[in-house]
Length: 316
Image (cartoon, helix red, strand yellow):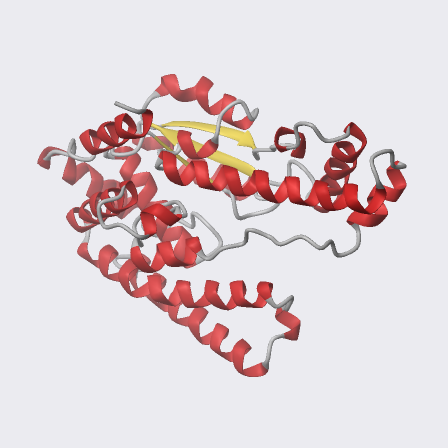
């Protein structure tokens, strides 16, 4: 049995462990946390709420929150306070930082150093705080390994092996393509400033940017990762199995949660599709047409309305 099949078997086994006696506790947790802001957008907030419930139900060993917010330590600490009474292990860490050098074996050290300097200049470290939540206190050291880049975060969060592998391969391909373009421009014995000058101008690099996350939301709206190409073409994939299990969990807790997520998924996909197409064409929000901006505003308003209709229940 290969690692992928063993991983699938372990996931499938865990997906059937929620007993009827656990449902009332899950509903109590849900009622307490339904109005808590997990993330800056309604869609991600609902997904994060479901991820937390999956941890409480022990369908998922670890969940993490805070990936989308900069300068979020205050809000993350507030979220931690909201979770503290549910018997969960919570761990607050800095954001995960994976240096370019981990993808650039064989490239000159000057180019690797310049890439890391430029990346850190654009995306300063430690602007995010992450909150990790688990029912298994022994996971603490493994979580700290992820933050130190000794392990892939996707594996820790229980994503299918095939999806994690595709994501890592694309990151590696993009980083190596950029480094190759820089070498072509400056040669193999460059001055550091010459490398930085090249990096600060458009490079002839074809990105592996894809719409997998959008298609995942459309087809598998209850999972927490971007499905790989293989999973997106199969109804018998690991992603499909996870989607079915998490939807079943949501249904057992509150059918209104299922309804809200099913109605919001195509709206969120449409929002992300506009962003994806804009990036492909080098457009920013400011350069979008007035009609596109109006469409985005309407889509976002509909998402907020669905979110508020669910999270405000019982809070009048």
